[in-house]
Length: 456
Image (cartoon, rainbow, N blue to C red; front, side, top):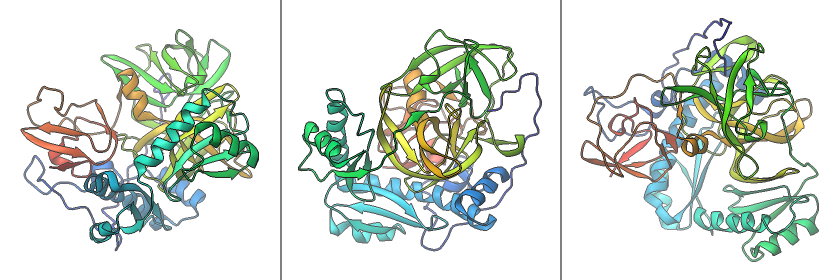
């Protein structure tokens, strides 16, 4: 995140690319007209995928080996696929078993179900259907048993476990078969088709030098700014919890007084937020290549298989793809749950830095293995749980609030609230169901954002 303090930076020009939707991924039909009376915007327009930063495109081309046209199409396809997957998730209900993307330009969306009778409906949404044995809810329940077991037994030799929707199973990463089998047995999931993946890597925290803009904790350790946030009138930023405890003071990249950690959690989760002084102005910017910036417009969670890019001062701006959500990682300091596993490389010093998918904030760097020379795996703490946990609002480049009278009540749509896929809200007397996990922005009222909400 670029903080405009004793420094100026040239804002990147946004490139309008238009909607580039490939055959096989038709643009999701708009269920409602926009508040202005015209056609509702598509997912790519809502999420800003049709106007990406040139620096984001450049990094995608380098790291995913794409040309400019392929990188542009991939971002649009990913945005449109997220809405399509959300509609299918809501309609399939308990039969839903996950969704993921494939293809150079992410033009193949696969949605899994436990019932063959759903195949026609899935194909009607422009997706490939895969019939599997276990619904996503069953996989998540099995992983929760592993999470519980991790509190009772050592996981030093089984440092990572996650739900793999592509394989339709829970996977335990272990240094050897015996360690993996012992963890599975201790969790009571031996008969639930839990796979064991053998790998020598032991994830470690990436703390010593920052990713994104540097900040210093108690004038010693360094970490990185994740995303700018506000809590009421107070500005600040989110970062990794292992970077500092509540009460720790921070100085900025230029070593001037900056702020104080308000809350921090690690292990368990890897999340924290820092309240900054008035001289530091929160912005929607994330530092990209060559000192330029990418602006975030929201926090819609990307699908497995989607591209994601990370900013880090040690290794710079790098991209990869999302492999799994809701991974648990056993660091030497303790276990962290709810992380997202990626193929983005990172090295010590990149901790706390921001991950973005297109223009959507995804999370902050936690840890990983490998490096940016030979390749590696990194994990990030998703941003939406941080926003929800601490009552924070992501600073975005979104337009002003959509018209309409704000309702009250438990189910009323509320800007600033984090909504999970499947959640229901009311707005102007109409009920909507959430398609993609996100924090509600003022400009994202349900009637005008069929990319995020489905009228029911």
